[in-house]
Length: 216
Length: 338
Image (cartoon, rainbow over all chains, first blue to last red; front, side, top):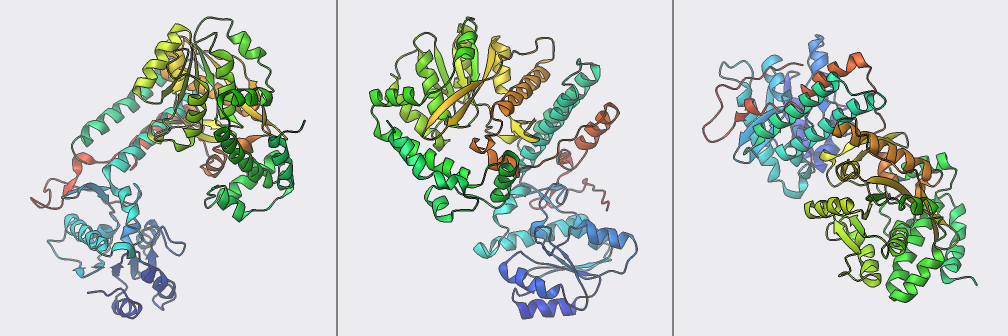
């Protein structure tokens, strides 16, 4: 069980091995503690893309891929919300939403132990450990964050995981792609390449709408 | 004789030379400057050579207009508008020589509400006028227009009607244009960004609905750009007009709509030149993203495929995982790449 006060967080960090990740919610207490944690002797990687002191998940993954020694990861998973950060579609009783793959990569590829607030622990190397195990724990972590009420600073932003928001972003991107094409053809006659690419975009939008039907 | 409007404008005139923020005034005028707005406004000020205080002076005049409109009855309001209007309407009169429908496209710039009412007042006895704008229930800023409309026009008069930006409004606009009506429309705002296309405006992308161009194409109507410009001191204004625009009938519909929208906003940019601070969306626009990629012919296909297969557009919904209920989806498979 990880308590969300500075002394308990200090203890959790001191106990953590270089191949372990502490998954914490974004609260004022945690943010204040992160300033101190960043200077700890273990020099943890703080993955929190929406904080000035935080890294994007690609940074530790790239360093691990290069073979640099592992470091403890302090991870605010509730900030991994953007499509490139949270690409995995999951269906739960709360509807369809998107979760990050970073935690699963740490556990399965880099053999990290995951400690998710409040009390889940996922040790590495067990034969039954799958991506689904990690995603279920992550989902339960986010459900627990909701119980923090107004203390949870990322509560309102969680709708970015929802299907409605993702579909809206996808449509915006499709309009952007169309505009790039239209701009390329502003001074030129339309040709078969333009029709083919516009059809391709329209077909993608139809398929997206069709596959999303009934899932939200 | 110097009017009340001019006196107020002159009393506040020193603001126009100030280059600092005025927090109390901002709160009083409900300017709601967000993070990044000051930098955005200062960048625009730098480009057009105005101090920041001209933005505050402008907001003060807007506040004064809403007070004045509430205080005037219909005859005095008509006389007031007539006094303020310094427009040269030759371009509009020329466009009206043709009987086909005309979309008068007006951005939220200058004293646009006063301008639109002045133009409607000028036109509606000789030509059916439809004013197309966001419903004040969802766009509270439009309540002032509603107030003026109800005060100056008879809502039962079919020669001058307001229509809202919904399906019924679109159908009315289309039918009106086919009958030869003038439809006043404000194309610089969108209801849903997911349906809006980015168009280059003042050096950066502006997300716009292509509806004005689509209406013109479907109704065989023309588009006349009009920008309301302030003439200070006081609340005087002059409407500036661009050239009449028409849809390119030889291009595919969506490309023709985009081209017409680009031309329309090029006209707006040139008509607003030097007064961009008086555009209602200047802050958001200047704060927004600034890059518009221009891939070469060879890169276009690759770009489309790359974007379609990226995480924004490939939602992998057919590979979703079930976390509760029946347990995990055994068939689901995810390739985890760094």
